[in-house]
Image (cartoon, rainbow, N blue to C red):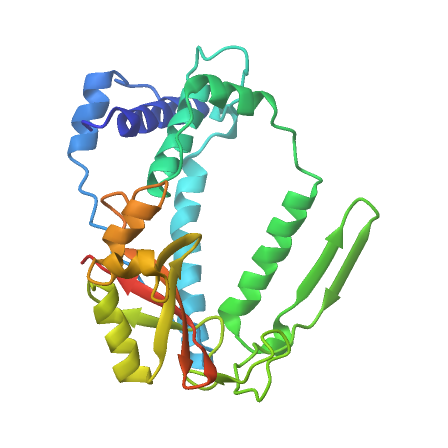
Length: 303
């Protein structure tokens, strides 16, 4: 709890929750710090989940686990007195109950996680002042539709049960349709946009596929790897709107032996923070007189 922003989040959340649930006790800064220091947060580990269609036995096991959890929660339901629950109302012109401070801490912790610009307290108050209730709005409708879709996806990934939605509440229009299967890239004798023959490398890749590079490399090392592995002569490497290298440009020749992440930091307006471990790269290249069409590269330069 040495980080002031993290402590502000925990403290303000604890105070608000205590008021909502009518909890009495020691809510001083020292006590909150002491209790928080005893909580051991496990290190974050990226979890890759494969969504697959569940068999009947797996569904029965999960239903039994859900029933057990509901039974356990029902015990606590009997202990709760609804009259003791007091909903919080945001007072935009006063922060005497630290609601704005809690929102401010949430905003800036999220900003830190996503490496975006943090808000000052004045801007947070301005944002809160412009919040419009969205109970009956496009945001609420999209949230509900997406939740239904996730519920379907949890049970099956068959495309027959997936839906696209065109939504316009301004004219009260909701149109559902069945999406097409994901496009698999194929070789083309003449690409309608590039007007050149293209070759899919690898054949049949989709927008969901990534080529993983699991080590830090210089531009030359990556270009040599792509040539050796895929027989593609890479000429342009970019990451978002940052150009890493264009091999045909004379003023880029000094980048050939530099690390890709170092070039990104030198060329980008926003530097990579310490917690950033990967970049997504787009590679343009050729196989002889044919343009190579490749998926995005996930370049992990730090363990």
